[in-house]
Length: 256
Image (cartoon, rainbow, N blue to C red; front, side):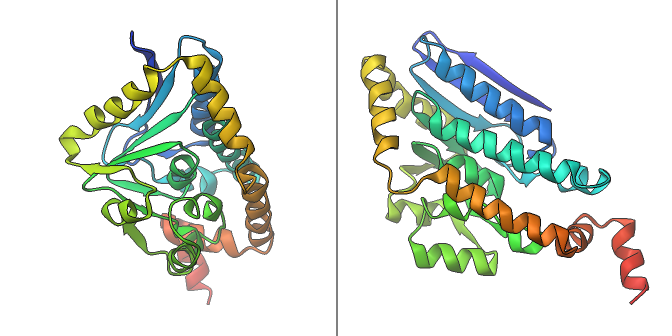
């Protein structure tokens, strides 16, 4: 697994997630994303960030197998803190963040994209928050930045997904392009931003965050509290075992 960061001569910093097979990030992976975004914003030479991924899809959320293979609640707490740090780093990055999304963008992926400043997607991209299947809550805060309220609730309660092409009508996805053209499209938008004086753009980013009607950090932290309740009740562990296909799930079913 790797999170790489490359600063181009034009001031565009490209941060790439590459965690085969599906970009489901470990606890360390989420913290690595946060560190990359924090470092990007702290570098005066960075005018804008493009957040992208290699592989089959943009992001499949938290690494469920790591969570189930770790005794106690250490991995759960670590994932909560890691996701919070990564989403916060995208939102509070001192420069605009352009998300280039391909394939699946699920759970934690929606957290990253929902907090980005601009979203460009490929024609095979789709978004979803399947948390209810794993006995967790989270990223509703961020999905609500991509779709209207009733659509968000429907997607959340049903665990349905929605195509990037359908998000264009809401204005949350700027444009949908063929997969082969995604990087070029994201860099083109980032390039427009990068041509402006970075002092002004950085002030604009801070200003727009300041007038945001929702405090995304507090809102997401509130969601995480319910996830912890479900874990303490044993509900989440049961559903994650079934999702991961672990021996514990089989033994549980055999005892019923």
